[in-house]
Image 1: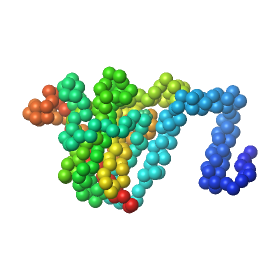
Image 2 (image 1 turned 135 degrees about the vertical axis):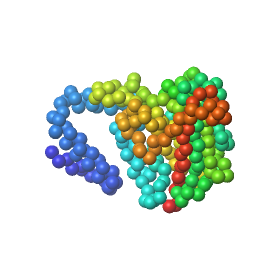
Image 3 (image 1 turned 90 degrees about the vertical axis):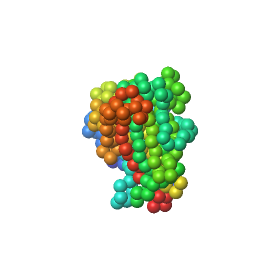
Image 4 (image 1 turned 180 degrees about the vertical axis):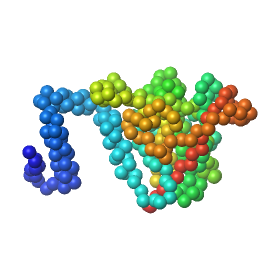
Length: 279
Ligand code: BEZ
Ligand code: FE
């Protein structure tokens, strides 16, 4: 049953090789599982619906292909620690408010109401440890319920999003609330498929970053809140140990007041390390 693809014109060799391998893998699965005509038609109907509902990226995400392609694209040979890349995800919005550090990602009211106020501080550094002044830390996150502003009519425009400019020492700082886990769209074909094969649709709580600095490669990544119930089973398989935050709980009342909080809050320090361009 070995299928050799017939070439009629000058071929794109790489595409030919990938198509041939993919074809062979599909044949192997069909043979191994003795896929029936009904099953094959239903697989084709599923893929058609994925296209109609514009869910191919989501399907690639839950199959772990998006993260795999991102890993390969950003593989580097630096021996020094460089911050790991990650996928951007579908919920990024360009042109979030541009602010100087220290910043706040939501209203005072939201922070005071929150059960989990949060402070994040750190520096943007070169791979050799030199601070990068005037870098832009573009940050976006969900609220405590796991909802992003652009999917939730109850949140203000650009809530929990900002582009923070680092100071002369490459430092950034922002106040926010800890995000909750996010459940990816369950209503469409991808969600139904996950349910049918017994997989959940949760992403562990995380905060996204896109760091832009002159003369450095752009870094897109996400940092994870520790001890999340889904940290070991992210629906898109994006968790990397180096990207799990180390949170400290601050109980001291004077520290709470100094930061404008009315309850214990979490704080973490995280430095981003960027690769110089053409390296
Ligand atoms: C997210 O990061 O929020 C996300 C990533 C992939 C699919 C859906 C959501
Ligand atoms: Fe996200």
